Length: 188
Image 1: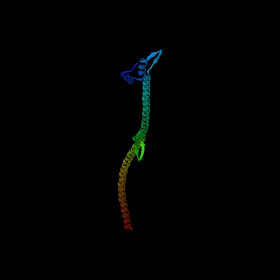
Image 2: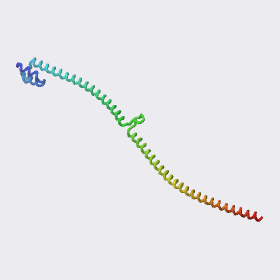
Image 3: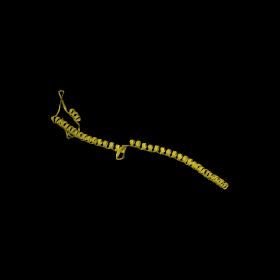
Image 4: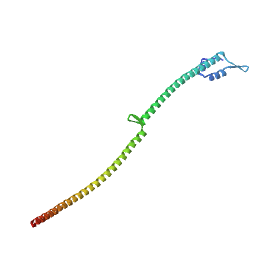
């Protein structure tokens, strides 16, 4: 069987299995054997070699692509590790507060801050209570001082009156003694 130009272009466009089928159907049979033209077998072999070359090139390209992808994956993994470190550092900084030049976690800072505020509130309550107590004591002491001062003034007045009264009585008694002395002196 001869090949026309259309047959050859069909051969080029067919896959190996399609070409094999075409070759098998268009070959002659002799005593239960198939007879193939050498040019058809050579064309099949060329097609097989071309296909193998394409597959090998695809495999080589695939290996190159895999190598490139592996390098890319390694670079991305390295970037991920760097970003993880940056993220951890950022979270550490974001979760911390600089206090007296030290990075303190926010929870610890809050505990310290609320502890200080609580301590100040307790001191304020104690100071207020102490002030109130002192104010009460001052008020009581002032009242007692006023009462004592009034009592002292009363005592002083009474004492002054008693002194004046005693002075008058003494003068009266002195006058009586002087009068008695003058009577006694006049009798003598």
